[in-house]
Image 1: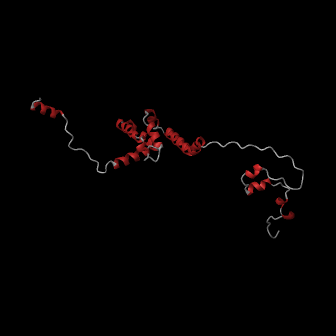
Image 2: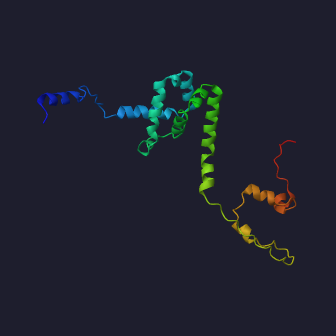
Image 3: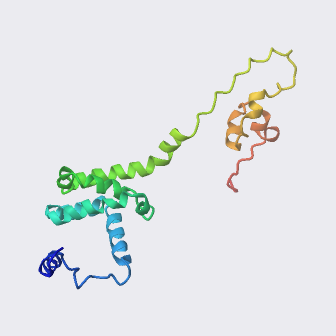
Length: 196
């Protein structure tokens, strides 16, 4: 059995809990919103360029803060992010070469252009891989020649399936000698100035 002196020695070695524990008054909401706003600012290459120009990337504490912010990639936090490019840039900012390269205006413009082209073509590129390609329609053999008559030939099955022509396309199909194209009985209907 331990003596009372040994018991006192054991309790003195146990660290006591800190007396001034900081309690966030809003339960961490303010910190959450500030970090969310900052991380979404990283989606802007001009802001990253600003940080590089003002030497934030040379501060080790700031680099550790960027490393800490990677928790935003977890599913329970990612649902709050409106600009997903910020996560891509956050990942790139872990690389020291990218941090130094973003100090140059040409690299900022390159990143901005690449981001623009991604946004411009994202939907089309995504649909290309998602939607199945339609099967080619079978081509029907041409119908046998009909005896010549004054009636125009009947429209083929493929013409019936094609969309309706616009008036501009229909006018271009008319021949120059067609009576519909010449006006009523050869009358010139152009407007002319009166008095000449």
